[in-house]
Image (cartoon, rainbow, N blue to C red):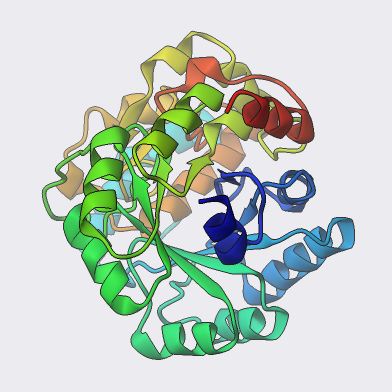
Length: 349
């Protein structure tokens, strides 16, 4: 297993730091990769040039391998009436901080499915690994990445999605259990979600796929990693476990919430971004609890308003509108330097 791990991902430890866009930047990824695990960058919220600068910043700190994660969602179809109704619903929250909501919603993030500049950047910089969330890109993009010698991973929440990824040409599948923090990797957020847990999904994919499986969701310590390895996973991917590391980009409000009672009560919400995501409870999730899924605009249109509201409130000293993503294992998070955390995780295996 360790030989396969090294050949595929270039690491010695079966530990992957999850690519948490907005919370995991180059400092965290480099610290993890330099310790023998796989550090990751989530670039779904970045333009290609900014992603290139982040990759370069990791390489300036370490020669270790790097995973770069991109979002492969279907670009949203504009719905003016839905957007207007959503902005009207958010208007009282904006006015609480002395502002009006934006006049319209913008597609603030491009999908990798159509982002030629991001593809060109990845082909030029050739990170060891590229991983996909929300599905897979078109076949020609997969062929181009593989031809460049890049290892491809894809995130699945079900056997059906995993089989689609395997058929598309990924070399390993990330089994994202319902416990995981951040955005659910579901390909179609309009379909019913079977909500499979990490252990059940990992074992199912190990038994049914012809490619390696990486377990993700609720894993916070060495015992959790050891458990999924016993189920046949090649490695474990941890995100929330790294949020309290000093190298993470989590702000003070995010860290305080993760270290407090909210960590015991994570929940799924679409209200912040337009896609289901597991979050620490805050002002935005409370607002979302009163709204049907069909009333929230698609990702990333809803995120446009969400980010503007968060910035406005944070400037006034209120951090409760942030995208405080966290998994169900949140109470187990530890405030350790990333290298120390990786070493402690490895020592418990």
